[in-house]
Length: 54
Image (cartoon, rainbow, N blue to C red; front, side, top):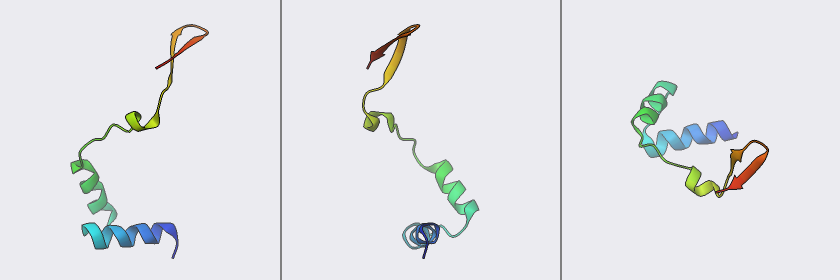
């Protein structure tokens, strides 16, 4: 079983999602998450040619 088939099986068993349309509807209803907080620091350009770590 490839990874896509495994994911589709998990979605069906765990969440009752059996089609692309059901998955799209579920994603639209899902709360938004901010993954940036988990990504660590980032470089922010403050002046052309210089960067500031945040």
